[in-house]
Image (cartoon, rainbow, N blue to C red; front, side, top):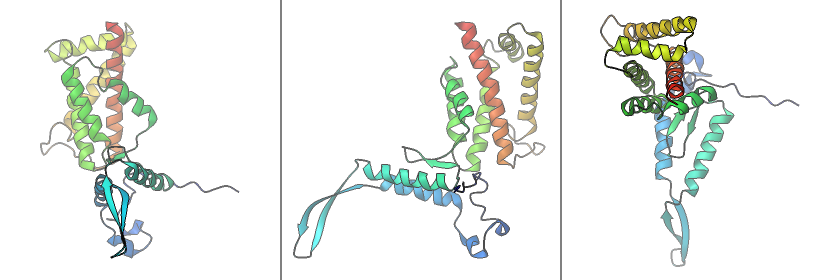
Length: 242
């Protein structure tokens, strides 16, 4: 007999209290905001203590307890919360630091791990670390901030060789293309397209003529696309410098 597999919910679908049509009944429209619930889970994890019984008071018939920070009950709490999330196909998890984070595809997690602190540029490392730290947080505003930071990292990367951004970017493209003229054209086009996207949308600029990104799917797509390009550049630089 086949067991039913829960449908994996995106963070947009968990749960949409602003749209009653998506809810099983109108009573559920009174559910608290999902981010408030996630914040509450983090609060609970932070304040969980491990109780230890150290005596019995016969007069009032009660046990005496002390409380420590051994972490056993926190660990059990994380395990149970993450099991509930997993069984219901929810894209969040509670990490060992007690912070709710979003799960991201393993292939992208590998790329992110490869480039976080390995660029050879301390400031670029800081920008990437901030971008990736914010990207996995649940709230949409954190994801927007992560997109801004990774675009800042891209602009920083374009000055890797010298302050003249155009000349430095051309040198970087030469390193990436490895004397392959067709791939050089491809990489140059990707540099130009992503630069244009950064200027067209509300990523690095927020003037009235800039387009606001409303969809989390669009934000994720742009973040992953930029991460892939930065990963290509960083790995190419490492190979060239070895």
